[in-house]
Image 1 (cartoon, one colour):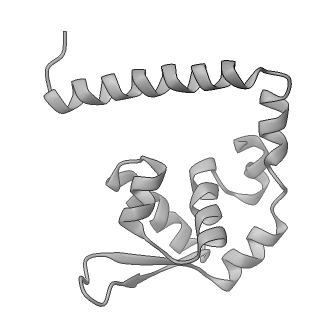
Image 2 (cartoon, rainbow, N blue to C red):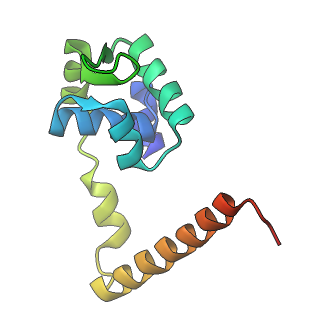
Length: 126
């Protein structure tokens, strides 16, 4: 994914932010961080980069000025329209693999991630 996006000066997480804004419309930054399951500080850096590139704009929330609404700019929409369709990645990676095997893999990875996150929350390591 990153190699396909490199000529457009985008990384995969930047693409996901643009994808969300292109498909769902303006989104609160905190909600986007939750949706993408990334740390708030990481999201702040990604958004700052997209703002600097002129692809996304931040608008302070009317109720809580600390919260930011993200919106794709005209330049962001133009770039989004030029990006290649990345759906081929999923088909190349997973076509021909049994759906039950994919579901089992997803479950294993989710369980492993949850266990590691729980360990981090506790702050105790073996």
